[in-house]
Image (tube, rainbow over all chains, first blue to last red; front, side, top):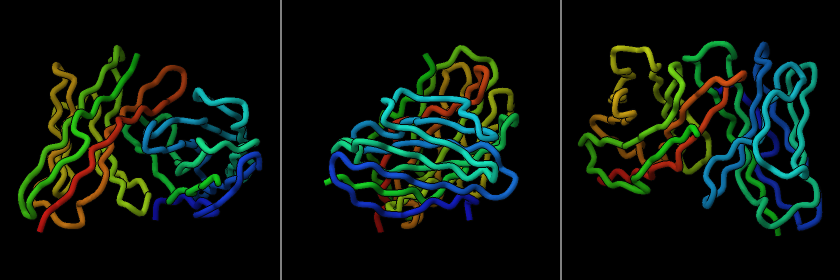
Length: 114
Length: 115
């Protein structure tokens, strides 16, 4: 419905592990942004990719990384997981160069760290 | 620095009544966009309404309208005839351009519609 597919929907990991989340926008949308949402910090911008290049980055440690493939699918990787990484991770597609176009979000991946 | 402020952590409204969710913003840019999103408990973020900084008319989308007061830097969301399904978290967001587009989100307002 929003044209963004995120997998998996739910994930449980333990401290120290790493995780990879996936985001696929509908065809033709080359811009993908990632957000972390927690009750305490709200919605925080992680990074944005456009045509396989990271175009923007938020204030997160280097344990958070991402990439984008030629088909616009994007992955986000978090290494050495910490309890504080428990969050809802949202991915959004957007139409660039058009100020009045909103971001459209996927359903998110809910990550729990034990 | 650009900022979005939503001062109401939570609100209650009776079904079929109207409700206003507050949003103020701070930016030095002349061109910007303001958005409202709804997030039900399921987690998905649903786009509701958009207002451009140069738009002279307040935006409306069905039961949603945006009360845009540029001089006061406020962009309040008005929901008319509230429905039980409107119970959700509501986020105000601003899109600014500084080389690339970036979104800034407020902390959200939790709305509960009472039967």
